[in-house]
Length: 473
Image 1 (cartoon, rainbow, N blue to C red):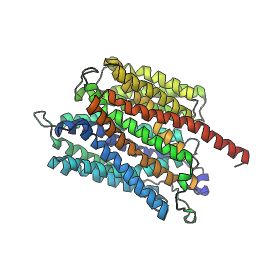
Image 2 (cartoon, helix red, strand yellow; image 1 turned 45 degrees about the vertical axis):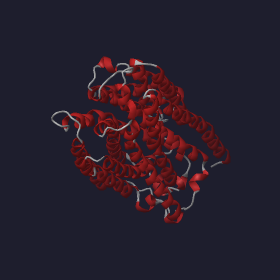
Image 3 (tube, helix red, strand yellow; image 1 turned 120 degrees about the vertical axis):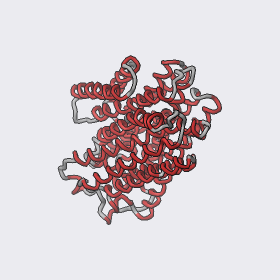
Image 4 (cartoon, helix red, strand yellow; image 1 turned 135 degrees about the vertical axis):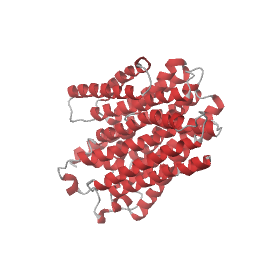
């Protein structure tokens, strides 16, 4: 288990947390660029929906491959992160991701789709290392009780990156670096991804200079084997994470195509990218609210005030980013109020809140499937704000109480990000066969699984804590 002497020290983790939060922002930005690449490469190479979803398949498939390798190393030779330390692991992940960005240059130069997919795979491998190390690291920078709140805060800045990416990234690729005649050209992706690589390397340099606390296990306590799989809530959590990432990525990947449908809004890519920002911006609002709501050290009265202030501030930030009028985004205020209600009904319990949010998303997806026009559009965009706390809540619930198996369990949960590779492929196939709108039945089943996982954790983890309390542990 984590060295008690290190954990027991009363440390101020503000600087390490701010540094890691900057990293979360950057990898959120680059990850969301996939949603811009999909419609762009689809037109550039005349791809079907299924073929264009290979972007997500290669990117998120790398999470599975990378995590699988990590897991097998951990059960045979011991936890790699414990041996090298979280800091070195994070820097290695950044370098690998930067290399993936650099590979976009030859892919764009030769205008060859498989090269783009290869670059995305390497980029995904880099982010795999970051997911395994940085998420677990944030959960350790304080008490276990506040881990969900803390991870929600860092994930909020991750969502800030995903909010900016569609607008800024879309402008760079669709407009600023596009061909003078407005035609599609792979060359438009070269400079943006070189810029991303340079920024990542600067973040790596910053992290190398900042003193980060070490949470390494004593050598004699390193365990091998399949111990993490003895925990039933971890196994269910892996499946829930598969469904969450699959559902979130699938919805985000299809928003631009969904809004292009004549029975929905009939928008082009330049307009749709601004609404895509609202989808990811909703996640940012919800994660800031989640960081406050799930912090059990704040009274209910203060929570309401802090949450109202945070929601107003973040809403204004989103309004300043997107190229839309207030009347065009005012519908989002309804979702913010609904989000408030859901948080207070959840009563700061991560598992219960997770179930409530998943139930709301099931209802919104069904609405998007059966309705047309603005109602369908509002329904699909509202899903983002209720996705907000899902990653952090599933992650912390899944690894809760794992002790010395925390990093091993973390690698399994990150492996489940494979859902982002598999679910969009299936939705792409349904979209080709039955249309984009009907294809959203796939994410419906994903959120139903998350709903059940939240209900399961409410009972299971509650029972475990009750048993520990009775036994005096």
